[in-house]
Amino acid sequence: MNPSKEKLLNEAYQKFLDIGLSIDSSMDNLEVYIDKDVMGYGTTLDEKILSFSGFRELMHRQREQSEGLQMEWKLNPVLRRVLPQENAAVYADDILLKITMAHETVEMRLRCSVVMEFKKDTWVVIHWHASKPEAVTSEEDTFGLEEWKTKNEALEKKVAEKTAQLQQSLNDLKATQAQLIQSEKMASLGELTAGIAHEIQNPLNFVNNFSEVSIELLNEMEEAILKSDRDEINAISTDIKQNLEKINHHGKRADAIVRGMLQHSQSSTGKKEPTDINALCDEYLRLSYHGLRAKDKSFNATIKTDFDNSIGSIKIIPQDIGRVILNLLTNAFYVVNEKKQQKIEGYEPTVSISTKKSVDKIEIRVSDNGNGIPQKVLDKIFQPFFTTKPTGQGTGLGLSLSYDIVKAHGGELKVETKEARRPW
Image (cartoon, rainbow, N blue to C red; front, side, top):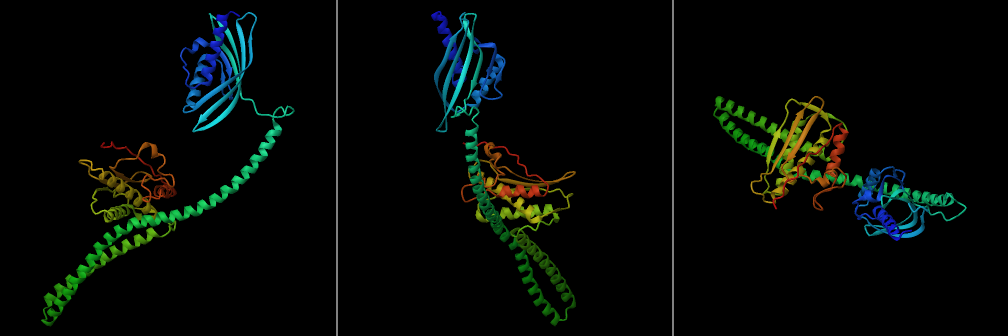
């Protein structure tokens, strides 16, 4: 063969191999080396090419899949044949491909045959076929059935061992999960404790004050009785009655707070009951806020409420929905407090809670003006054990349990967020 023509042939073949096996080789001027009606079979079922555009699309897809990999290959020529007219050639090779990813190298053996045609003073690929030979060791076992059986038996044994391990791991996980769920409940109860202390102090102060005033009024009544001053006796009696009504009112308020705490700490009975959702939201809003204030006296936040009074009572499991509301509000106060620590000029921590009734559902919306949730973790926030809080400050179960509670009530828990710009 003419040396210059042979050189063009080898260059065209080398360019084809570079394109197919090197992820960083240039794909410019592909049409110079690849025929417009090229046909080829790759190593997978879907790699069947019948045109130049199909070949180019395959190469782009292959490079996308190979991003981040390091690839090296070694050629072992098997056949170099040029037809007598020297216008067509067939090349065949065994190829050892080494792929490195994450410091691990995998070897892959390929066989490749290529048909090229000399057109318009250049060689172009008109057909290629690549395959991955199976490692069959016996010449009598063409399809590798014996080796397959041996591997299958070993695989079944390994699967059985792994299944037993997974079953034990599942049992351990269930036990751990039960403990963690209880820990999460106790953690949320701890969040309530400080808020409850603040809330219960208010009605107790009223009870104590009105009791002391009533004692003074009784002393005055004794004097009025000695003086037989009927008008004074009647006036004092009316004041005492009003005081007792107020004592009764604030005593019931303290009792409701204690019962709410006990309900929160108990396991859910699963029984739904008519509940004033606005009152529930308002109560947990104040408890979560004062809970944070008890930990950090310097913290203050603007609280906004917008309750739909047309809702009335709805059937829910109050202690379960209360846990959800508490968790969402606690997270909201946590993030606005975290942002406040950045000392951004003009920033005012704000947490809002609203309720809204539509045709077939009730919406409870908790919002804050914190830093938002980064998009890279947005899809993970409802996963068990995932938390963005520092170690020891979050179990990673609050939102996961809240999601399950809302779902069990036939609802859905969704998040909308916009990541805030950092001040630096």
